[in-house]
Length: 288
Image (cartoon, rainbow, N blue to C red):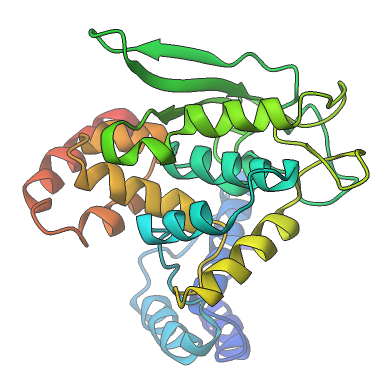
């Protein structure tokens, strides 16, 4: 230490084409941080390193993940039509879907990664308090509850806020979904997650990501809808709220966006280009 630019370029070249460009970028960020901690110089302005990274991005394009498609109202409609609400498991599926969609949430912050993976320090528990806010006309505005951990805030947690739906979207309202879930799964004991359910034998089970996506995936495949992933709820809910006229800064707060990654959503929506400069200024003011 310090690593000179020739060594760094050789490092990039050794891995070029074997991993994605973003992977190499992440590794270099780690090396840069290591140099900073040691008080050693890092050649961040080297054009040679820059060109090597550009080449690595091109060569590693085959390893990049495909862009995630968003969940749409068509996906939600397919679920609503095909789920059997006489089954506690399906009631839980629908509650997860509605909260994730209208709350712009990552699935990992609502459900459990594995059957034995429930941890009250990381996952929202059955005992959490569900809160309701109201509009001026006394109609329900939003459902909210606290979660102990998120991808961005870690152990600081966050507040999930799922907006109520009215009129033609009433069947998709998160209030109706969570009430149906709580009624169908009222005998869930303490020590389980908020969205746990009773299986066919009446035993409590935590809703795990593989079960949720497996059930939804079959329904969407039969409906000839595009393949989506867990993050698709996060993105799809944001798109739907933006199209409904919700201000970008409000949607960004709901979804926990603290970086300019939110621009990739805004930029795809016709009519939202005037918001880009305003939102950029807002994000800069929040970060600096």
